[in-house]
Every structure is written in C-alpha cells, then in structure tokens.
Length: 291
Image (cartoon, rainbow, N blue to C red; front, side):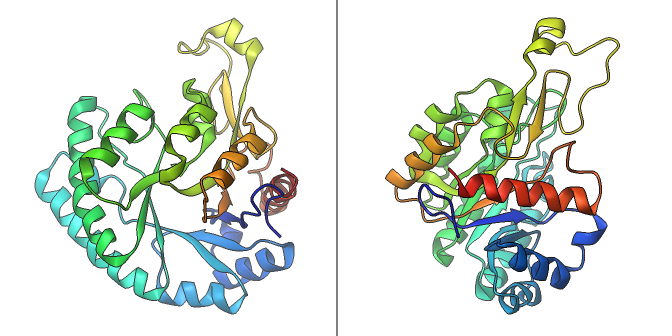
C-alpha cells in the first residue's frame, strides 16, 4: 500500500544501528510491517536477492565513497569514479536502477572548486549510467561546517544537470534539507520534478522560539543543540515538520514520477534504540499513506 496521493511505494533507508545489520531479519520485519522496499548502501547481488526473497524491492543503492568522488586530488577522484562506473555495471546487472550519491565536498575549498570536482564525477558517471539505463540521484545534504556540498540548492543542481550533458543525473528530493536552508521546497519541486529520481521521507521542524533567541546562524552560547539538527532546527519523521507533503506528492504525480518514497530516519525522538527506530519508521509509513 502506497501513498494516498500518487500511490507511491513506501520504504526506508537502511540505518546503521545494530538491529539493522542483519538484512534478512530486517527485510522480514519490513515486509511484515507493510513496507515495499529498502534502500541499501553499496548493494551486492546477494543483498538484492535477500530483499527479493522477503518480497521486497530495492529502492536505491549508494554509490561508493561519497568523499572520494569529489576529491580535490585528481588522481584519487579519477580512481574513485572508475570504481563507481565498474560498480554500477555490477549493481545494475543485479537489479539496481537508482544510485544515491552525496557529494561530500572539502570545506576548505571554494564552492566553485567543489562544483568542478562534482561535475567531473557527474559527467563521467552520468555517461556510464546513461549507457546502462540507470539513474543517479544527487542528495541535497549541504554538509557540515560551511555547508560546502554542491547539489544542495537550485543553483548547483541546475548547473550539474545542465553541464553534465547526461540524462541520468537528477535529484534525490529530500525536503528536510531545503527547509533547514530556507529554500522553498515546493517551488524547488516545481522546477526540478522532471528530474526527481528518488524521494526521501524526512522532515524538518523549525524551532521558531529558538530562531528568536539565537538567530539563524550563530547558535547558542549556552544551550545544547538538537540531535540530528542544530539549535533552531531538527530533522524529524514525516509529518512532524514543515513539509507540505500532499502538495509535493501532487506535483510528483503530475510529472509522472515513477519512483519510491523512502523514510530516512534521523529524529532524536526515535533514534534511541531498536523499539524507537521501529516506531519511527512505522509512524512515518502510516503518515505517508495518509497524504
């Protein structure tokens, strides 16, 4: 059972906690709970087979080494891109279609330099993906510190898609990152919906009282920040933040989106233990089914 608007399949991104490491057990729980798919890391043929055996589909598969593919070291970057092209060939043969890439850039470099490194990856890997019939969904996480990652705002998404010269480079639509940066997540989707290859079900709560107290950028001299967030914002499960989900799903439906919605669980209220994570994933699924 998918979302009410668009009937998009609902799954989740595999986490890092101990109970999620046994994929067979995780897949069994996911299927019995009502999920349709799981997003994996660097997916292997055996892992894809494990999902299929449980009656689940593969959502997305991570590319290899997010930092190396945009490294300032041209030799390291070239080697990482070559490894990813080879990996994509193996993974697509195993059943992967959408590859998830986060362009984790060097914060000491200028935004233009980091964009050029990212473009090197997108042009080369994107051409290979075109030939394989695969898609590369760029994650919109801006990074830490001075937020150096390209592919997190309209300016750099637009340029990467255009200048890569490929059909496969597109967007992992995660409204939580856009909201924390102050970017209109609905306007963004109206512009980029035709290039959205994957959707993350994650939200952001803006803590308005804290915005007054600390401002947007300085943080607090005394108060501790939020887990999966900062002083004035925090990531949440779908429905606990500011995302206008029904409107977003209507736009995706109008643009004939054929992908999935994957909950990425990063919420201090639920990332506590196995029971908390299962509750967060289940609550998120039930909310997404309602919109």
